[in-house]
Length: 208
Image (cartoon, one colour):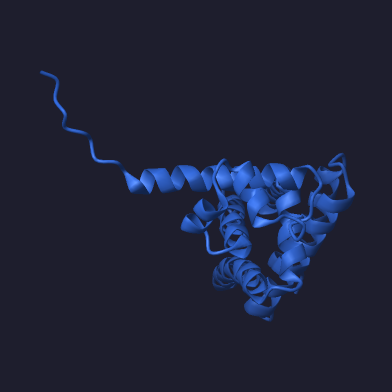
């Protein structure tokens, strides 16, 4: 006689699968040209293959969904930037230019999501604070690199690591957002190189 014992369902796996469907569905809706403000919970739920009530089993609201999407975007971009070091293989000016070019490609791939984050951040404090904290993580990483270079004697001692890192990250973020929004990518390599030269010679190897 066949066993009637059933394997216990994995609630965590089910939740993860539904969340992935919802997040993917939103990405598709945004790529179709809709703004995030225009999207309703019912529309998002239907695109993800669940009911409106089912949506609230996994997300608090639309903002919660956007926060999770921005977390994925942040994690991938931070991984790209952590691959660059001022010295060593793949480092230096050429490596920094390559890193910026990779960031252009990454954000261009998720241009609709980046636009949605900027859209909602303009009026929702939680999204704005989350996106600001993302930049803070990049600033902290850059500040540590500058400090290490100063201790090694390769970067001038009169540079303020925190101020310099803040300018580099916040200024770079604006250039990246503008490039992704206004260019088709044909000049990404050129813009990436100019950004890298500006920060490399202006901060890491500034003449004393």
